[in-house]
Image (cartoon, rainbow, N blue to C red; front, side, top):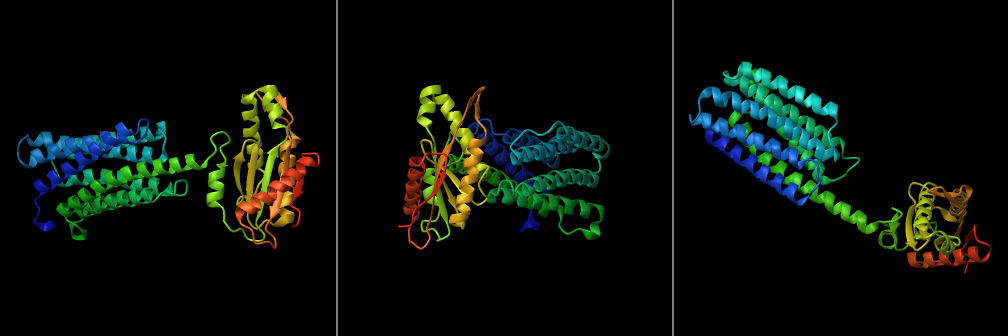
Length: 379
């Protein structure tokens, strides 16, 4: 089937793929204000649309050879460089550095200078065009794939693989043009496959944006907006409903917090909560889960900690909070916390029951003078 397609038809299909991509990125621009990447991608696909239009006009002899031969490759080089910048910006989530921008412009300028020299030679022009495509797509694939650890989204990996395939196909075309005996794919079939991948790039860019938005909403739904730690809803939905005997729960309460609010105002109280949450978070283990329980109370789930270790961690947290006063814009406030610790032990209790045990231990810590850690008493 691919062998039956002529180059003019493939060029027309290619232009359609760029138009679909352009419309997709314009939609993203309009529906995601402030999102970095789609504007540059739209500009890149617009340039590719112009370039493929000129190439098509050349095949149909609508414009003079000098116009389409030079114009198509110049717009192609500019388009691929813009697509690279757009994908990198979308991947990183921030503006490209001046160094990256300057290097990209340098590559584009060199490519355009070469284009003036080889415009009339079909093989050299095609080689230059595909070399720029390979460079842009393979560089974008590298950036997308190495970002997996920071942002483990399947759409990111898929987009990286697709751009990588586009780059490899373009590289294969360059290899075939350099040495026809080593050609692994003819140029018409290569263009057809790249067309399919263009559609896929537009699709997975939109999927990446959608997956990011969904993940952001999930984070917002599970995070306390004031302190930045997890909220009570997340804690009870995510932690094991039936803790192991060595799992521990810890309930923490800021001592005399109401008097801080009454004396200094709620803005200072909010600052105290934020700083206490920060100190607690810096004192727990990597696998422990901290959440705001409500008001001035926090809860921690400590997997496999056991009673003794959980109490030691509680003491470490208490010291971290009490050691230094909280600085609230020049106003220094001494803050202490009371902590209740509970482990399942031999009792077969669920997470809610474990939290209630820690709450009773916390009540005992407050009744015994505050600024201390108390374990739940055996039933």
